[in-house]
Every structure is written in C-alpha cells, then in structure tokens.
Amino acid sequence: MEELRKIDLTFLNRYYESGRSNILVVYGHRNVEQDSLLFKFIENRRNVFYTARSVSEREQIRLWSKELMEAGNKTGEDLTYTDIFNTSIGTNARHPVIFVVKNFEYIIKNSDSFMKELVNFIEQNGKFRQILVLLVSSDVSWVENSMVATLGSLSANIAGFRKIKPLPFSEMRSYFKNMPYRDAVLTYSVLGGQTMLWRYFDENLSFKENVCKNILDPGSFLYGEALRLTEYSLRETSVYHTILSEMASGVSKLNDLYHATGFSRAKISVYLKTLIHHDFAYKAYSFGNAGRENVMKGVYKIADPLIYFYFKFIFPNESSLLMMPADKFYDIFISAGIQNYANEFFKGICREYVFRLEERGLLPFEIGDEGEWIGKEGNIDIIAQSDMGDTAIGICAWQRQITHEDLIKLEDCAKKARLEGDLIYLFSTAGFDEWLVDASLKPGSKLRLIGIDELTNG
Image (tube, rainbow, N blue to C red):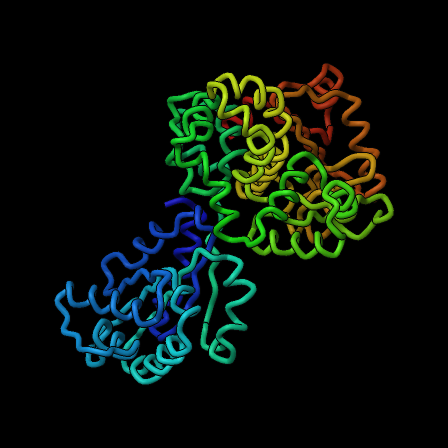
C-alpha cells in the first residue's frame, strides 16, 4: 500500500486494536479511492458492508433488507434500522465486527432515526463485544460543514474523523513506473493525487496522446468529469462556472473577480467559500507574520487539478473542440500554455522533495512549519522552518533555466518577508546558469541546485 494509506490504515487499526466499540467517519473527495483502504482494513476480519443509495428511507430499508436476504439472512416486513442491525451484526455473538456503511450521507439526509437507532444499538450491544462502525462518505462539504448540524447532539457519539487525502506525486511515479518524469509532472498537474482518475491514463502514451484520447475525446470519461464534479456538488452552476472560468484565466483576487464577472463582492465571497468547502478552491496564505505590508492578500486559486485544467484550456474553447480533431485542438489551445500551467503544480512537487530530504536526514533541521510567500513584487515558492528558526527557502522553475538574476529576486523577496535563508533551494528542469553553478560549488555555500537528474531519481 502507498505510504500515506499506511498512515490511514494505522489510524483505523488503532481503534480496532483498542477492543472498544466506536463510531468513526471516513471521508474524502469522490475521485480519491477509499475502497482499497477499506477492503484492506476489513480483510480477514468479521465485517458487515453496505453501500447506501440516494433513495427514500423506506426504499433504503427495502434495498438493505433484500441484500440481507440474498446473503441468507431471515428478515421480516416493515423493518426498522434496528432490525437491520440485529440481523446483519447480531446480538449474541462475542467476536469483534466492523460495520461499514458507505455513502452514509444518503441515509442521514432522509432519516431522522438512523443515527439514533445506531447509537442505541451500540450502547446496548457494544459493551459485550466490539462493534467498530465506519461511516464512509465522498461528500467532503457535507461532512465538514453540515453533518454535525444535521445530527445535532448525536454527533457527540462520533469518536473520530479521517479524511482520505489525495496521494503525493511520488506515489504517482510509483503507479506509472515507465512514464517519463516530465510527462508524469504534466499528468499530475491534470489528475493530481486523485487516484480514481489515474486508471484512465496509459503510461505507454505521451502526455499529449493521453490528453487527446482520455480528456478531449467526447466519448471518454474524463471529458465530462470536471462538469460532473461541479454539477453534482453545486447549485447555480452558471455563477460558479463564471467564477471558475475567470480564476482559471488568472483572476485571483476578490476585487478583480468583481470587475471581471459583474457579480457583487458579497456574492462572490459567498460562492468562493462554497468552492473552498468542496475542495474545489482555496485561499492562499503567505508564511509567517513578518513583512505583511509586502504580501499580496486575498489570493484565491483553484484546488482541483482536473477542474483547473478544464476551465483553463477546454471551457473557453469548447466550440473549437467539437469542430476539429483532438490533436489539432491540443496544438492550438493547450500546447503553448501547458508548461506555464504546470509550474504551479511543480512547486508542490518540489516541496514534497524537501520533505523527503528531511525524512532521509538530509536536511540539517526538522521542519516545524512550512508554506509559501506571495509578495506584491515576487514570490517565495518554498519556505521550510524549524521550531528554532532555521530556514530553507526556494524557488521552482518548470522547463525554464534559473539564473543569478532569479536568485537576486529571491533574496530581495526574503528581505521583504524578513526571512533569513540558511539554505536556498533552486529547482529547475532546464538547468542553471554558470554563475549559480560556480557559486554552489564554493565551500560553505548555502545554495542547493536541484536539477532534472536529482528530481527524476529523488
């Protein structure tokens, strides 16, 4: 299993190995696979697994009862959820059982009694045997922003939450073992760590071929997935799509969105919060509290890579896509902008590289805090700082050579941010000028030049 999933599995195992009955909520983006983690956790352990549907309470119970009968259980008429718990889990056994309800939000939204009956059942039966309940959801916004209010005081019975997060770039590299590094970075800039989407790309095809076949072809699954994500989660998609379209074109501040869209600032603010709640967007914050007068405030960015790619390249040119071959569309509308687009994701990949250095003991301090600095006149892409104040700063250049002038700009930004860089990391897939190479080789130099070879093998 992937390293991050091992941590998730450890979290679940801790509750199982405690021997106590508990209710846990496990959730994540719908394109971040959860099933493999769940199946690994329940493997060789007694379990009950049910996938809820978006139906009425009566139909939900009928479907559940039908599944129980097909599994050889005896059920009656006019069942309650308590009857289902009694039938599927049992009341007399002494062995531990894991009770998994996938898409549990479909039940909660249509039932006032499910959670109450579940809590009562565990209180009555969980004293004599361990019943570990996993309530699983792919509705991030509902879990994080509405669930507690919906459940009221019953939410106090939830012992823990686990958000299953997208996987890092290093895991994509392991998944696509034969994919060239540059194609892998471009692929990550479109699919991100959303593992459910990885299966649609073929490592034996070039990035362009994958995009043409699996995103630009109207018959492909990924062609419509970005819109399915927004239409599934959001109302008034015309407003959200307008905002996302402008954000993808580079409009990142609330006031600029106001001028670009014509919507009121108050309306945009509300809609941005909703996009953030769904993990579709995020508000970028600068590291630390010093030098705030030089910081660009109120910067919003698209968080979901597939949505970003769609609104950046396809949404503004949809008519052309339907009127020309996919490879021609790529050459005209994507090719020129894809490298600059990928640079934003390359920054995250470089941050991940620094974290791996720390894990291997190759960073001279432990990272206590990290982030970026978004200045009015320049950015610091990477900041990693120990609790004692040891600091590493860095910039990242995708498919562009880094020069001495870039270093001067970085050091100027560091002064404005009031940061003293004990180490300076420069990441580039196109190399470094002669001045930087010479300076990095001098004894005691704090420059660290990370090129394509280090990145490919790191």
